[in-house]
Length: 547
Image (tube, rainbow, N blue to C red; front, side):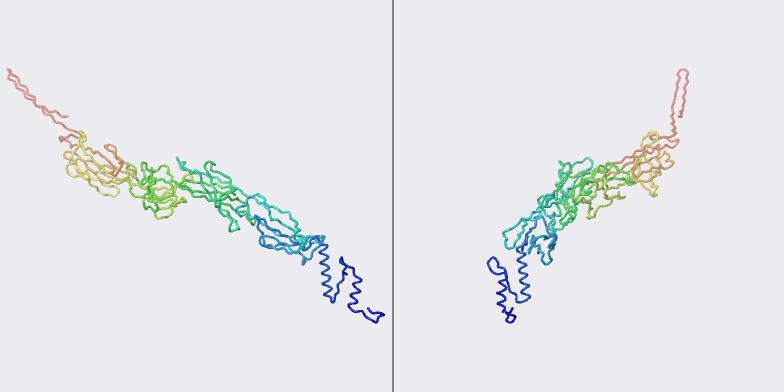
């Protein structure tokens, strides 16, 4: 201003006079700043506002340190900050929240009366770590602190630390043994493997093991298993809150096949004992008794006999015997009476997982009785029985014909016979020729036959007709009544036998040499001489008796 409006004050004079109007601070300095421009005014006001905030805010340039709990993971690497107090905070003035290196850090936190901020982030409990324990309370954070004033970092306030837990699950496992008749040879314990699905961590376990034992009556409830020689629990859900899936597989039990039934987390393992049997049939499919087979075990690929295995005998059409994995040979050692021994060797394999393979390595899967010799899988009460079916023909027969006199039953020589197969019209001659009373016809197969006498002995009448007889596929021989005959099935390699006695009748009027059947005329001539002395009478008489 100027005196009497004529003289003006300088800028320095004005500043001096303004300072006289301003109050002094605690040091005696006037609370006055000069401003030469609008920008200077803005900067001054902002500075004063900061002073006000600093002096009147509850939290000034504060910070928060919030490390993650050891059993948790962050759901994402970002956090949301929201103003929720009665006095809103401008978005530009909200604090900064960052997640890195396993910790949440908040900076530039300024709060006054009625102001409140919420910091939102998510944590996931790490159920997939091997040391997780279900239903145990885990601290979600480490030591969480608030520094209210950035100018006084030694002044810190601790937050309360929340905790969380996650549920586990249990598996109930039951073992059923399905044994062959007359066998109870089971192990004392078995191992099983649990496979866990829906894992999200590549380092999380996916397989763990357990065991069942005879002393536990083959049942158990499991809330933890073994993994890498350490116990691991069975959480209900994974790190993302999805339910784990649990399924079961059993380590192979030698000599058994297994099946597993699962209802939720309840499992039943059924072990079916593997067996080997032999069935022996005749050509009509009728069962034969009396056969026996020998089982021998070999080394891999049948290279040599396994000396540690004691050969086993198997009776045909008998109960199966248990069998373990390996390479085997089967051979008939005793044939049924009346049948030939088959010395051929049948090879097969039982794999570790209970699969049957033939000598070529082809799986044996046929489950119906074959019409020719071969294997099939016969399921008996749940047990898979590898069964070798053997179909045999009856051995050939040897027919022996004996010629006798019908009356004296003495052998008579001089006859000739031939045999005709009625089915093929083949004529069979006896092995013998010449003067004999016995005739042998060899290697007769089942069928219909006619025995004909082509020449009768001298002074004997030939048979009026042939003798019809038959041999069926079971070895039964049928000969007409009135003939003395016998048939027998033989063991070993010799033929089965038929013996037939054919009586002949002497010709009428002929003296029998050795007697014979039919009407016999016997002439007896006697001489009676009577001599009478004194009277001189001599009487001679001949008589003949006929019977």
